[in-house]
Image (cartoon, rainbow, N blue to C red; front, side, top):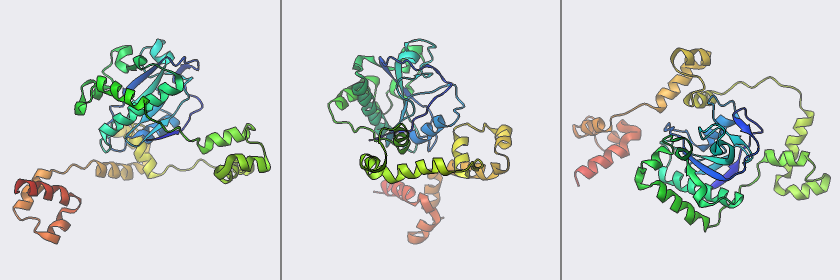
Amino acid sequence: MKIKQQLIRDTKHKYGKSNKKKYITVHQTDNWDRGANAQVHANLQSRVNPRKASWHWQVDDIQAIQSFIHDFQLWHCSDGRGNGNLNSIGVELCLNRDGNYNKAVENGAELVAYIMKKENIQLSNVVQHNYWSGKNCPSQIRRGKNGISWSDFKKLVAKKLNKGIVEPTKTIEKLIAETLAGKYGNGAERRRLLGSNYNEVQREIDKMYNSKPTTKPTKTIDKLVEETLLGFHGNGAERKKSLGSNYQKVQQIINGKFERVDINKLVQETLAGKHGNGAQRKKSLGKYYKEVQNIINKRYK
């Protein structure tokens, strides 16, 4: 699993920066939308999060991304100024339906083990969101989805503790901040210490000191689609007003993403000869060809 940082300097959704790091609180996003993965949730936090919530980490079936350093006392446990918000590290496990649920849970366990080692937290202090406020979270682990219960999750964490875990590599933004703070010196010394990252870091620093103010870039349609799926632009008339002239394009893409096809109906049509055979069937069924053909093959083995 890849572990990286996309750190945010500050948020209004916090109580302070004096987290004693006594606990790790495990959540699940309950967001099943396609594409609602760790990167999307990290991006949500990097911008203006419309939710009155914040958390330290998000993890999916591919990677874990850190949004806040562990000192932050974030709003993720629904317990006000209790130990959950004030003294625990929040980890959100993503549930996007185009991801691998079991792998996301496994990566979540690996991330928890990594944080435990880093902050010297005991396994007994790895808890559910439910522990603090009674909320049904992490909902899918609590109901034992795919045979993985909370007890199984903690056993998986224990196994991961005994395996090597890859330390996150520093982001270019982090290296830039450290360079500006004088950590890597100047000239030849800076080049030597930054190694293969030198050119990129130096280029960005040069831009910072030579650039002129620019107008705010226009958001791409893909960015607007991502924001809409995360609820930034509301629904119905509110969405139409928020997106303005981009509404039709964004809505068409979203409608295409979530277009539902009745596979059983396609199977029946194929058996009735509507989609022909061989190359003709493949062309007629398009992206659904393999799924339909697999069902037919199984049915007539």
